[in-house]
Image 1 (cartoon, rainbow, N blue to C red):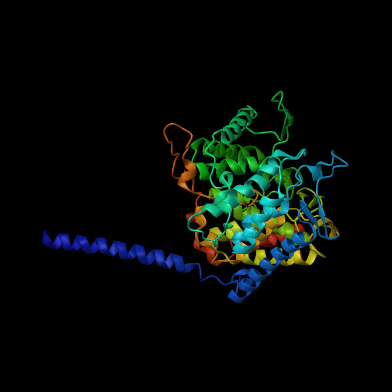
Image 2: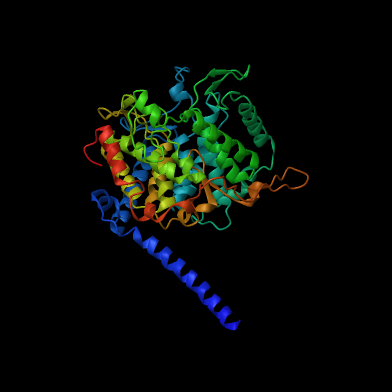
Length: 510
């Protein structure tokens, strides 16, 4: 009996050892295959090059920021070609391209506040806050778009306030010496009216989605509740709705937000994706069908708002990797990203590029998820392209046409608040944000909001209700933990798929 027990234990140990050896052997097997040219090109990123790119990203921000302060402040935006400021177009109120967002409230300075904190410049942050307090007034008869002001102005001010009030002060002492004397700015209001109106509007929109598909349109008559724009998609006018369902859940823990996001994500995949059969038989180009149908399953018109940064946040890493590869290939084709690209014609439909951050943001988040050096190479390519094609006399300018790289005299505020911020964070591995990544969520304008249990308490309720403190793990294998070793040590997407993209788009090299 004793012998049988010993034998049984030995057999059990043998099984464990066999399993461990097998697992180690499997893990090491990935290094046995030969490296191809793309593996060699993108497989590493030297430390001295990372530091060089970090310095370049910092220099890019300060060239834009200092130019704004020198030539445009206190106006809303910088005209980088003429080296002057830009404000609302009072002579033409119908000029929505300008008047939607410019409201004569030092927009670029306000939008840049938390970028100064991320760069560790507490002194300039304090100076900027002082300038905002002394200069900005909202007591003006200007008509602006609520959404843009909400994400750029209100979001920036809330982010700056919360960072200043963080007792740990991880970005340095951000508080001006007089800050605590401003009662309205020294505490959060604890008033339910703002969230109440936002949630009510959200639920109304959600309940108006199409009964047959569950999809939302892009323009609605607020009086009748009828959809005027029946086009549904993932681009401008809709992308932030889906993004904020997920981010709102992360911040506030309301399970209803996550339920709506999951349902929206499901029907988007059901109705907006087109697989290999569609692409082969409807005149489209067949591209990377082996990539689990990810690249083929995109809208025929690619908007300037890539969705893969939301997919990364959701843990859908595999699909985000494939979608990002296509957008980056389009960037490589033009040197910048056109506002809209037609998949059937393989050409740009809307050809300007206003220094948008979405591809940089996705690159940064995918690097955080995989730590693959490929994304550092992508970031370096983007940074160099911005310097080569958009750097102007006094800042960075909108590309009027990606075809001839002609420039337009405008530097939108999101260039400093998002594009530069994500480039800097991509290369700054020791930044507090990167070392404490789970403590923050980025708003749709790239502003830092802390993920903290205090924001899950509804202080206005009689009994404090703390929303769900944990994050829901969706069904399926959607998790950053699902990133396998190959995604970290080799190209995140196999070389021959990248070459297929390159060949389809007519790129000479990848």
